Length: 262
Image (spheres, rainbow, N blue to C red):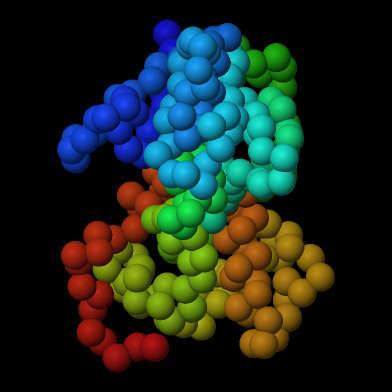
């Protein structure tokens, strides 16, 4: 079974035209594929063509390795960017000349600078392996979780709402304010009376007791924006809030009650 699937951003065959989807390249463990402006003469094997004269003929190489993949950058002076398409704003940079940089993302976009802005391709890594809790070493032992969150609690809904812009793919999404969160959650059962003050209480509780931000966690109004940003960043960084949790929020088509509360 393939480790990664590569989708070029345009036609991958010389002379191919049209708007149809480009060919998909399937790579299994140990397979490699070079990418660049054009396949160097005499070289066989997989190749991903990037039709921009600003990209060198041999720009880099992909390598499927087990349940992840590696990226090599053949450029002597240009870094490449790998964007996590499942978590807006998360990315890693592969420095010029770097060989075999491991990429942990399951759904990635490799971006290269080009004469016409940028170019690149998409990489799917569907075979990531996860530990089955029932078979985990020490599964019978009880360990205190550093971030013990109750997904049924109202404070968790507030945390999901804080993370929503980034989870929906807004790269520089600023966490919503307390009033915005209150209006977002009011259509839910048990949240009809949620106010801005109540949301701020939950934010303070998350910062002090649950995610333990420390330092400025209990700061005044001037720091609440930074506090919301830090909470969202920590929750997303450690996977405490994931895309699946968006289902806990009201549908965007459902209007919030017009009751005059802030």
